[in-house]
Image (cartoon, rainbow, N blue to C red):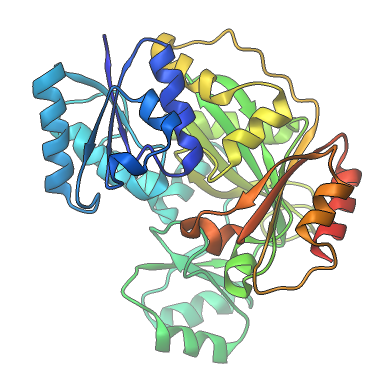
Length: 393
């Protein structure tokens, strides 16, 4: 029996489904987390063969000892994953120290985590990238802006989500950024007027996708975070061929094997230095599933089970699970601090045939995704957009 160590299997709370599918496929599923065992959901507890609680996942020594305990008790660990952006570097270090070869190693982390290095790989795939500059000092940034013009975007080179991401539109903004910047290493990019389109895939050990889909995020994640605005994105009913082509090219350029990935692109809203209106250009890669409820939304949009497809990839390096997009699944995240024309009860009554799930967003995700979410399915973008207008009014 192969041993699979799942780091932080309780976050996000839908990730227990990855564990359940692994166990159903005959793997021994061993969880490590800082949540008390009794506080784990019954579904997760029943999906784990054993759980090792640490005081904090931030302590490498504690997590190392947990993996060592499992190795001593059950034998060699074949797989170790968290499927979580925050722990990718930790996962890689543990794989190195326990000779686990089925995943990224520490030497892979620069181009997995650093946006400047991602651009090199996107360029290898022939996908246009925004002009950029490491924001080390004011003089260098002014020289860069002299070439690109305002506005520009600054963000941590190694960062999670849209936290500490800023749009700089003038000299005063630039001076304020340098006055308040933290210890992060920042990258500066020319501003791209585009709509985020993602390529999401489950990839086998040969680097071939066995499942593909994608989402559209019309509202900039940077604006959602900085303005604490509503969150809106949706899983497509069909993946456009240009996004598919770009995504598959990036898979090869990044050498992806045996993973669930979320690659982000811009579709240009206008002609710009980087390309023509409608063209797909690079943004960044995420070597883990689309965050939060993303996998569950993929299930609704594609009438499938991506948790099972992923577990099939782990266990069999293939799947016979069908997946065919047929509807749009939208995420609408509202803010507690805002007032809305429709109450929760009115939303549920008016859209009872469309709502699939609703509830509080985990506080750890609320900055990016809102405080209260609705998942709803629609046969077309037009109907989804009408829902968007009503729910945020």
